[in-house]
Length: 507
Image (tube, rainbow, N blue to C red; front, side, top):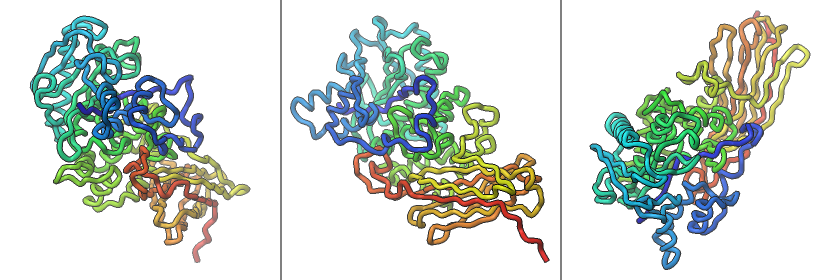
């Protein structure tokens, strides 16, 4: 049996530590580098709770082990098989979740729920089993029949028949559930099964009610089973960010995914979009990228991206970013322009996302600089090195004395050459509460200059957003980034020189 687990588990930052405090305007090294070690040793260490700082998450540890499993022999093969099991396989389950007593099941049209009636793994009541089954059936209907995604691949008679098997287990605090790819099908697709907590007891999962925890976990984890029908080896950030986005599409009222926004490009634009962190969970927070694309291009965008990323004969067979680029090309849109628009839009979330107004988790992000320009202090210079697929913003306000109609803000930007895909936007905040976004054009030498209104009588502020939209990678380097590669354009310098100037009178 071959299994890869893509589980929903996120250890929250303790002691009230904020993302900015942990990584003040600097992305962590963890998501982009990984020590080359035995997948079997890594998986065993991570699952035992003895992970090293350079180890991947359990998700990637088990995925790597699954992909390495065909090359293992002897004792190593036996140990790998012992880590990759269904709960009904007994004590060899990868999270030590094997049933110790015989299981029974209840089935619907598409799903069978397996459970035990004794031991700590038993659900609290028959009603909870029925609720789990009805929830999973509703999720299946929404994601497959209504939204049009591929159904999970059939598993033959594993679990009793070809319907999707869901096992109820006491998973313990922090681990809400997981779905595992099990039997390799054609073109990097696989059948699988899911495991959910047996009751989501408030003592272990205090953030939401048991019912809401069940709903949001079912929506998220089932989408992993759906993803196995496209490409189980897709880039980790895409696997998790789209599954977290799917929570919004199935149970919009739960809003559990808002908790991850502080670990997203909405609040931490300086951390690259494809970051995958075992401790901070950027891959969950960046569901906001797919939400932006959905609100701009429609709900079907994500499905089209998965078709472009899929590995079947009629699919695009692209890595995550190339899949997004392929969908945008059909819409006659440039990825560089759309990402730059996304970065700029994130500086005004209440005007960008339908559910953002009045919601604390969508608070305006802190800019790299927030300065007021006056007659005595007309100029501001900001220098910053920016990683691939990330952005920075500076916020400039006119002092009250700059009230005449001739005051302008002259912005000069020095960035990398076009091969690194520099981009910039000006977001002009007006006194009447509206904003206007202006595109900034770079020359072949990576230079840009533009002029914006800056009279305090009409303008509250101007935000300068700069982005490194490079998608150049050296693939296959064993990282958690796009195409398991290393980015070729990290740490590129941008210099922004902004000056309040008075335009000359005409005539």
